[in-house]
Length: 416
Ligand code: SF4
Image (cartoon, rainbow, N blue to C red):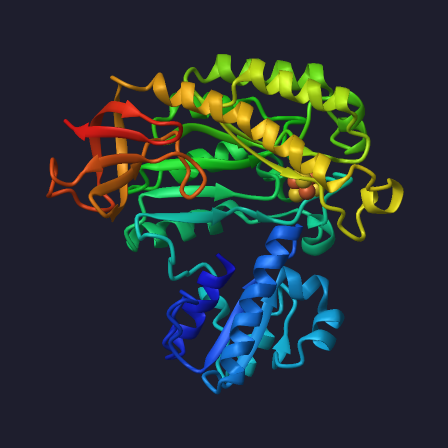
């Protein structure tokens, strides 16, 4: 979204901006980086190196790097990548716009050029995080939680709807904290209702809830408001009490189990996406076994996992030895994902024969590719519809389908 806002600011100033690095447009490149965990950092560095190559070949005149990675490792990057003309911190918008010879339009900060398919957009409702999960570098980079005012968010939603957006992926580092800093109370439920009230919004999907002090009133909105997808992305990270304690998650296994039961009871049919971490310091074989049992018994509809990577500046890095060998971490990760694959396959199989509403994202070869309310873009399963059976489908439109078959991940369906 930061990139989308920057693009809008530059377009207003007359720049032509291309978002896809595979299709370079001009002789200036601006790379917005992520610096949270190992994989994202590596991806950001690779993109920078690709653009440095282009610069060496004379295809690029200026190369600028902004975002979390440059905020976190400013001095190191300056020393190691002298080909980059300038690095900016995550929030130094003025600097980059000024260096590009443009003027900043503060009155247009809510405007964005959507770079996702035009029928959905991400909606960031806050920046930063007040939690102190021991392994996490995000608060170091982004600072404390700052909620955006509700009116500003709703105004942005109106603008997005005018551009054709129908589905919003609401995101925050800690979604359920929304409002506490600004209004003195959690207001995520009210915010979701306010967004749902905007005409033209059809689906709202919620990402990155935190389990401790979960605002239960949000579940009422999810159950009663048909625009709110029965979908919740809630990162749990682990279930073993000693590991949760070392991670500073401020929740126990029993509280976690109760919360999951309560969410499922309050919103029948809800699909939960969670994220688990394996290999955090203190994760014994027994603790990992507990995690596997929990995943088997809870049957999360969607689950992602990653191996612990030590991040400098975090509590875990400063206080615990990263003493679980990398092979063990990777073996645990594979085992966990194999368990989840079986669950996912069963969950998808249960949908065969059901009638569902899908939004079409794109055409890929012989299929239209869509999603149900239970599927977030890029991470979740998709719904495939044969083009030969329904040649006139439109991307960005909703259709009712019957699911005819399923594989481990995706569903196949026909339009009703
Ligand atoms: S809640 Fe999320 S973003 Fe915040 S510190 Fe914990 S893991 Fe990091």
